[in-house]
Length: 244
Image (cartoon, rainbow, N blue to C red; front, side, top):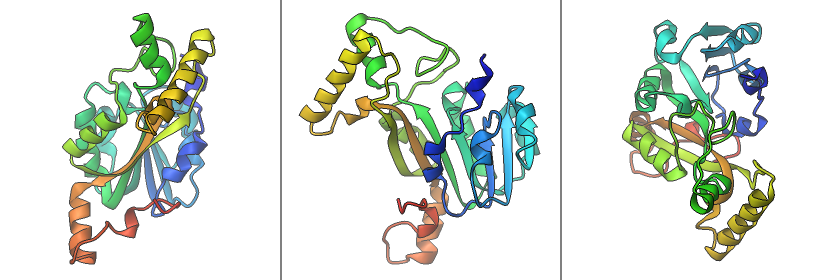
């Protein structure tokens, strides 16, 4: 695979990193470009199964070379303020087990963040609907290495079923031109029209990816019990820098 695949800095994901981010772990860190760009961290750890881990070692506090399942016993328990999984979950054989297991390594009030491809993106959905085609490629939503496919609704359900409280799920890469052929341009216009006609209810068709913030449900219960005994919204410790 092209080594550039592992070098994406992902600056658009920085706004999902919470203010409390001393010790950060990125699962699937590639060459470490994204986690290395996060300011205000005291420790930056990475897990990477490919040889891209060799390039990450000079940038991070600690890099574990292997899959999450293979190296998880080397990770400190209840330690990380943030665990990042950008474009990783869709590659996992058992994503539910990972989501459950990840909670073991989050410190109290820790947060899981990440991004995933949106299988309802207009180009993928309309080519299946109008062309009866589902063509796997080297990159993109139908990447040949993707084992799981999600919508924003289905992934929210997965998070809740695996013990998380969802803070935020938001579409990213709006109206992205993945395939700029004639069909792609027509489908993009159709997605825009449907978004307007539906008064925004079909706007998810226009997002190439979506990103999320989630915290273990047990932390939310404890936070509300100690800080808000009379009820109300969850505590500020879970909010991202832009006040979400």
